[in-house]
Image (cartoon, rainbow, N blue to C red; front, side, top):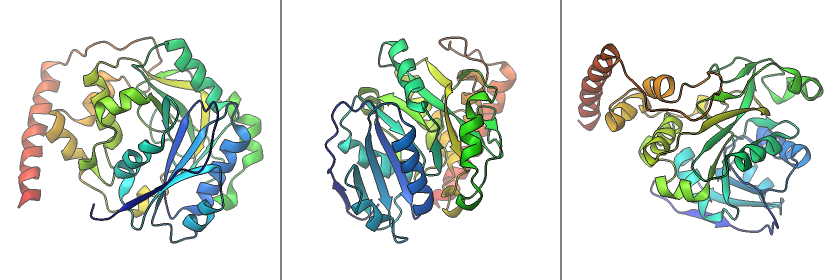
Length: 300
């Protein structure tokens, strides 16, 4: 990243439960909807922080008219890892909550997350809300189509039905919306910039938490958000996160999510150390060798 990033601390929020950090890249209609849903559907008071990547679609001008939003700004798209890490210095609450700009939060989404944080009673956790998606990207999400664009978003139907959609608390919190204690965020160094602009930065962050000793990775069913579906990711040039993860950790990201985090299975308490089969260990060894060749190819 060869540029300066600006920051603006403007809002005075008393008693904020979460500091909600939202990276946004020329996605103003969805960002407006996201912010509006937070304002009208949240139970508690929160600090709002937006990182504006480029903002050439009017996002920067709009943010400047919103005095209750703190923001950071880069003239070009610096990706989610740099954006989150830079926005961290504006955080004023004990908890950093990462939210995508193409998400609409449902009523009491934050109350359910905060109740879980209070139940845990210590800093060493990773807690996620549950996404409702038109086409579920994983078994952690609820499949229900309320629209894929602003123009066909069925908000009234979502608000009527969201709480009735069947889902249990689940293991393996990884994706936004997610919450960590700010001390834990700082201990692991936030998101790893080698994964910029951001592909595989989420499982990498989970692995860093695992190495720290975090064993409570809980998806909270009652905390629900509607996710329109990776509106920014589809436009960005992707890093080779799959091989970056293997080269860094010596295992595939699927080994982490399936055998460490048990992602998507019914929540049944703290996770235990994984017992990897001989076959899986050999598969990971082969992947490590493949990853090393890929790394050498990139370096050349």
